[in-house]
Amino acid sequence: MTSLIDVIFLLLLFFMLSSTFSKFAEIELSAAGQSQGQSADHPPLFLRLQPETLSLNGQALDFDGLVPALAAETLPDSRRAVLVAMGDDVSSQRLTDLLVLLRGVAGIAPTVLGGSPTVLGSAE
Image 1 (spheres, helix red, strand yellow):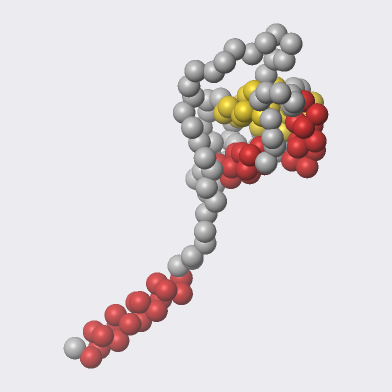
Image 2 (cartoon, one colour):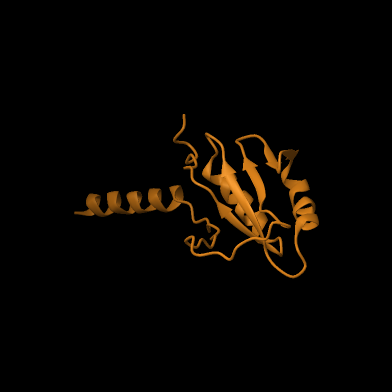
């Protein structure tokens, strides 16, 4: 009986030391619903997300230049639609990083178009 208790404590110690207690960020997602029509004067912005690149309306950007570019395109009195299209092999982490970045930009309404991001570690 004594050796069984020792084994249990060793297993408990192993699992306590090998597990991680990291806090994951949360992103608020909502289902697509009815949207108000966009006027012809302000068409939606098109954001293309690739595994290594990012482009806004066909112009290549990096994550640092995205916020100023979107801020220049926002409307003062309403929310501007931003359509996010993902390329092949875009990781979930890259999409999450983009959505967190877009959450900080006022005056835009991002919509993620179809596609399924690759979960990190499962593509190899």
